[in-house]
Image (cartoon, rainbow, N blue to C red; front, side):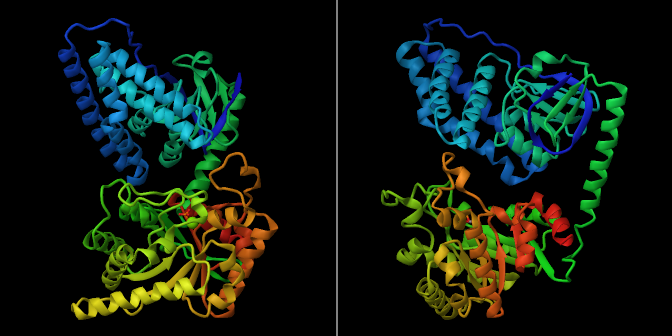
Length: 539
Ligand code: PEP
Ligand code: MG
């Protein structure tokens, strides 16, 4: 029997079914008499949940890297959210509701809100809330902290849904694939499967009913097919496919230390995008030639105040030292638009993506900008640093930003602090005006990096966050391609190099065109680097 679902993580798995079921916990409406004792129970369950989540997070950092493990930080934060756990306590307190029921009630309200949101990503976040809630309830029932023990090799885990914590606990040496009833390509289960490189097919409807523990299944993470108890013939066919895929992946690994050169003999740099200093490890493990984009705004997020000059200096120095002389492109603070900071209130705007953000904000709030520039300058002596400014629309902004840099240099000099004179200063080309004006801008900058995520939305007037107009958001639109070509030609006319750090740089279908246009550097998520290298070398 063949079932069709959503191919969520590439590869083939052939194994034996293990149905993962969370033990049913019965929740009643029973009122409690001793409210203080029930509140204490809730408090203990929340604490136990926190301890478990900290442990899962530590394990996830090891197996998946810091960025992917951040989902558990979000879970831990939920435990502190007064609107979430505070509301649970209030339910117990004011309505004498038992703690489990209180958790269930509050969770249902939250899940309803998230599930009715238009944005697919936000809808998926309902799964996080359910995951945390399940954990609190299990702890209240005295059944928390139990993972599911898989003892057999070649196991395919079958579940209704795999929560992020389930996924993080999968024993990579035994689990070869997983399949679920619900979930899609943007669900955490999918993202984690891709990071762990475990083939997965999600959203199969009723797969938990269609199979039983002990059945043999084939998981085709490329087409989304799941074949239950296959014939010997089909099995042999898939054994061959699996072997071919494995060999291809092995082949890709051989490219880790290979320099990327096109058939025409052009050397191209393939780099990684990072959000935190620790992410450089994955870039290096995947053979990245450098860091093409460090989104420094992540250093400013999830905290109560902006990072100090020394904190930022430590992060930049760490990355530069780890990269051992390989090029590191650090982007200055790109806040505003969809990224906000709790300690930096921004004015309400009708169109925040067209408003007070990125370089506009930094030039207006020089005291914030200078902290970062000083940290960058001081760190520059530890490696090969390129700094770029986001959202540049014309020459004036770049020149003004450079003036602030000069101010910082003068200050550091007076303080007897060192910086390198070899820093390259560039801009992100993500506003169509900058692309059209590239040949002039190129006379002043050292390099460009094309930010297609924004460039596409501004060129086609199609909000990158809106599902409704996502059909318009097309990287291969001829107008977008013309702007990219203009940018590359403009830079080359002045002997400057051009990179691309938007998602398009790792898009298999776009890479051949970008190579043809003469793009010098591609920067993408670390796990896409090897495949991109292969495709570039075939052009
Ligand atoms: C871009 O706009 O393409 C880009 C890389 O920046 P961000 O996605 O952070 O806006
Ligand atoms: Mg951008």
